[in-house]
Length: 353
Image 1 (cartoon, rainbow, N blue to C red):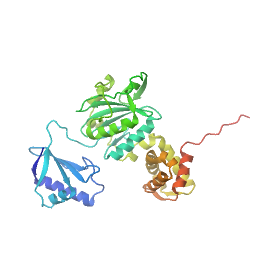
Image 2: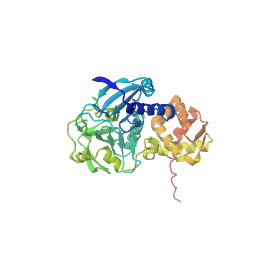
Image 3: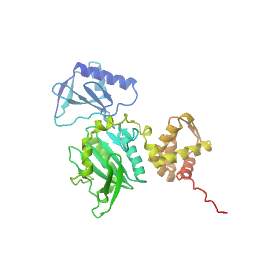
Image 4: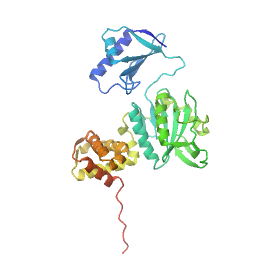
């Protein structure tokens, strides 16, 4: 239920900081923690022109949604009252960003600022899971937590902590086989194929979980958790962050590009374009260029081999990569280069003498 909120001096000062960031800062202030102060935090709701702030004050905390002009009016002293909603005492307030973890090292994690970054990271990890089974963990900003096991074109979802209930995804009960997975957090664990759902179902469920703390209607949970996973509920997002240096917020600065098969593909592709003088780039940051190209290949690489239009789109995206001075390859040129470099060259067979 919304009620009238009298703009206080601290909140007005915070709106001035928001206005300054909009005018002079970098980025669009997207996300629940895009800008923070001692008693207030918030940012633009992705895909909208609405900003949402959580303000801790007497009678609150308050959730306040504003459009940019309202923010500017408050900052200028022209607006003294807005609508607000009291955050219920049993409602968890978002703190920080959602967190995605896929390994034990500092760069085997990503703080999620946008759903686009999460989608890209999940697609990249699924490509890794096509080569070998992989377990990942996802926390929401409210500390809901799940484990996802990726294997081929399927995934198993285990909701460890959620206000909406916990449980294991229900797949095909006739798949009675199991396989063993070794993870740095869980150790060796036997995973049932009956828990697996198709990736085309699992990925949207993961995206929904990151926003809402539950998987949505497409995945059924059985209300149980493998006993070996129960201990993970003792480790919230803050505890995980304390165990490593601050994870990056840019997918290209994480280990995603190195772990995905597209990482080697990107290196071969860029080297081929250099050899054929179809690209000019800054050699000093070649590693960063390769990483960004690798993630572009996750998004467009396979489709671009069959579509000149997608290849032309990919060419434009590569040309915008920081460190690429010019790309002379047309969509057709790039399509040929993609096909030639997707697989590593075959080693010649030595003929015995």
